[in-house]
Image 1: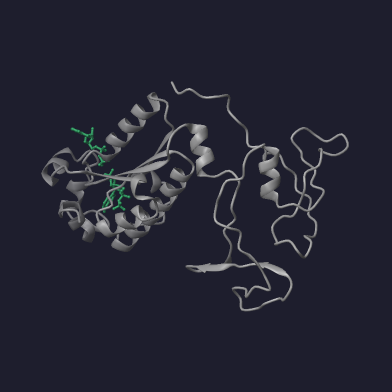
Image 2: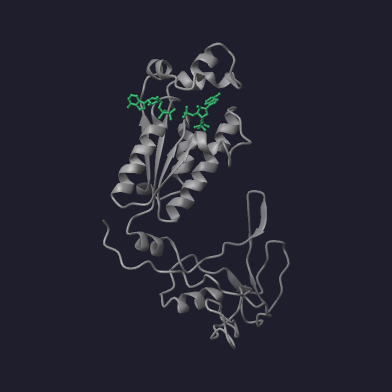
Length: 265
Ligand SMILES: Nc1ncnc2c1ncn2[C@@H]1O[C@H](COP(=O)(O)OS(=O)(=O)O)[C@@H](OP(=O)(O)O)[C@H]1O
Ligand SMILES: Nc1ncnc2c1ncn2[C@@H]1O[C@H](COP(=O)(O)OP(=O)(O)O)[C@@H](O)[C@H]1O
């Protein structure tokens, strides 16, 4: 068992925000202060009455030190992403990422460190790669079970399972596999950021795509495990009958059959 104090609650829960104009000297974050909950204030409801950045309010209410994170992007008379500039008025500088324009990273006072301290563990990703039938799901579940029994919070991202939901729109064409792996890499990163030990089990045959996932995290936080079971062994197991179907040319995207047998890159 892990030695832990009583669970702490995030004091941001139940906060009711009252919209008000931010003073011009303040960046355009919710600019609020902390009241007592108002007359007859309901439990868990905080009345917001004065100008203070919301993040500071929640940190103060929780009695915690604000986590160090990326600095807030606020400058006077900034050149905005859309090209306009307003002298003397603080504006947040937005960016363009991929196809998303005018977006802004919003930092929270509770960060990975705080969550890791709460859970008493380090968030990371264990990425299991290998042929269909090599034992990825079996290993992922066994690892999750073992860590869980030792008091660690884990979550398994299994390729098969994710294709029932998040990735149901993707086929097994090379570009869809790439998108499949990219999405799972991003989700795994979020789970690690949440402080969990995230176990991803996907065929993920291409090194370049796995490397992209690896690059989303600090090096020591991404552990790659290649289940090096030979094709003959996997094909003999064939628990879903997929190899049989593929050999008979009856499987959709059978052009990717080569990925089942070729050595992983
Ligand atoms: N054409 C084709 N090619 C490969 N795999 C196929 C195909 N059709 C269905 N399946 C089943 O899909 C399961 C999930 O695959 P993944 O998402 O892990 O594949 S990938 O990482 O996108 O390459 C994968 O699960 P596992 O058998 O557990 O590996 C397969 O059972
Ligand atoms: N180490 C192992 N030795 C023998 N059989 C295994 C082993 N790991 C898994 N299996 C069996 O192989 C089959 C495929 O395992 P699975 O975990 O579903 O593979 P994958 O997720 O890679 O497709 C299952 O029938 C499973 O019981």
